[in-house]
Length: 635
Image 1 (cartoon, rainbow, N blue to C red):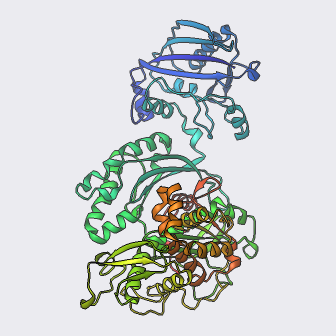
Image 2: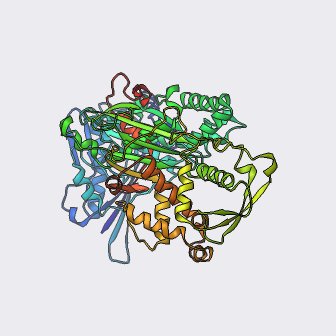
Image 3: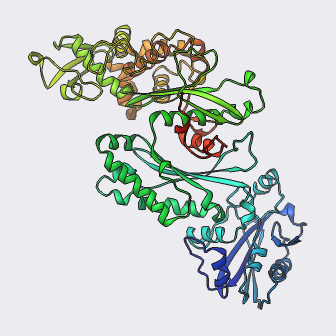
C-alpha cells in the first residue's frame, strides 16, 4: 500500500486551536491571512486508476479527494487542482502563490511514500471559497477520508477496511476544531443529536447519541456517537457545589466539537443523577438542588446547547428502570420489529429485572392478559405503538440491605443467645455480627431487648440450604422493624401480594447482582447450569450444593479467585435471596425464567438507561418531544 502525505497551507489570521469555532459571519471577516490545514490520506492500490479530483458544480463546488494516483507527478497535479477548485469556487478575486516540494522515500516493504507541501496565500475576505473547498465526510467513521455526498454506508465501510487511522500532528483540540470548522451545515441537516450525562454515585459519563430525521413511525434509529468519562461524581461536590457545573467543562467541550455547530441550539442536554445524588437529596435537599443549579448555569453561560432545568434532574428509581427497559428492547430490536406489525400481533417486549445493593427493580409491559393487580406506571409511544409499562423500585430490598436485615432476623430467631448458627454461611465458618450495623438502621430498624444487648454476637456457619431458604423468605414477611407484614414488599401498594404463578408473562433480562451472583455460582458449580438462557432448575441444584459446603471447601475457591472472597462466603445467602425473589415473590414460572437472560451486555452494548432516554428523546412523543417520561406516568 502506498501512502501520500499532502499538506495544504492556507494562510489566515484565524487561530486553529479555537475551543469553539467562530460563527460563519465572524469567520468571513477574519479570513484574511494565516491558517494551516493538514490533510493526510492513505491510497489503496485498488483505487489507483480512479480520478484524483472531481469538481461538482451545482450552485456550489465540492472538492472530492476520494482517491489519488500513485505517481508523484499526479500528487502535484492534485494539489494544483485543489487550489484551482478554491479559486473557481469564489466570486471574489484571490491571489494564489504555490511553492511545492516533494519528498519520496522507500519503506522496508518496498512501497513508496511521497509527501507534497504547498503553501497557498489567500487574500479573499469572503467565506465562499472556504465553503466550496469543504470536504464531504462519511457519517460512520472518525477517519478523515473524504467521500461524495451520495456515497453509501456500505461503500464507506468497504473503503475504510484498509484505511489507516489518521492522527493530527497537533493537539486533539486542534484536530477537533479544524474538523468542526470545515464541516458544511448541509451535511448534518439530516441528523439530530442529544447529549446525555450519566451522573452516577461513582462516575460521571457523557454520551452523545444521533439519529437520522427519517424516522420509523415517529421514532429515530439511534446510535451512539461519543462516550466520554468525565471528572468526579456530582455528589462529591458537597463542600463546593458551585464547582459542580465547571467540572463538566472538558466533557462538554468535546460535545460542542462533536455535535455540529449548526445543531447546537436544537441539541438538548439531559442529565440524570442516580444513587449518589438521591442519597445526598435525602440528607440535604437544598444542597442537591444547588449542585444541579450550578450545572444548569454553567451550561447556559458557556455553551449554546439547549438546556432546561427540568432536564437536569435526579432520576427516580422508577424512571431509571423505565429507561433501562427501553434500552433492552431497543437493543433486542423489539420496537423496530413491532413497527411493521399491528397492535394485536406485535411481539412481546422483554422485561427488566435489576438487583442492586440497596434496592431491586422490576419492569414489565402490561399486556391484556396481565393480571389487573399490576397497574401501569407510565405510558410511552415508540415506533408507532403505545406501551403501558409497570416499573417499580423497592428500596431496602437490594441484596446488601436485605442481608443486613437477614442477620437481625437471625439473631432474633435465636433469642440473641450464643452460639448462633447461621444456615446461610459455610459450615464451620466463624464470624461476628455487630449490633450497631444491624439494628436501628433505616432498612433494619428493629431493636435488641435491653437484657440481651451486646456490641457484637458470635456466629458460626451451619450450611443448611433449606433453613437458609426459610429465613430468607421471612424477609418478605416482615417490615423494616421486623414486625410481621402481609406484603411481600413494605410498600403502600402491597405489590405482588397474591400474584399467582404464571400471571407475570414475557421474557426478562436480569442485570446487576442478578448477573454477577449467577455468574459466580457457575464458577463454584463448575458451570453446571446456563445463564443465557437461564436454567432455573440447574441454578436451584447448584444453590443447594453450595449451601452445603464447608468453610475449607470454599477456601479452595477463594485461593483460586481471591478477589471473589466476599462473594464466595456470602454465596449461599445471595443465591438463595435471588431464588426466593424470582420464584416466590415475583412468582415467575419456570417457563418465564427459562426465557430469562442474565447479562451485563446485549449484542456487545451495555444494558444502561442512557440509551433508553435517547430513544425517548428521538421520538415524536405527544406534547413533549424530548421530555422525560414523567409526563406519561399517569397510570
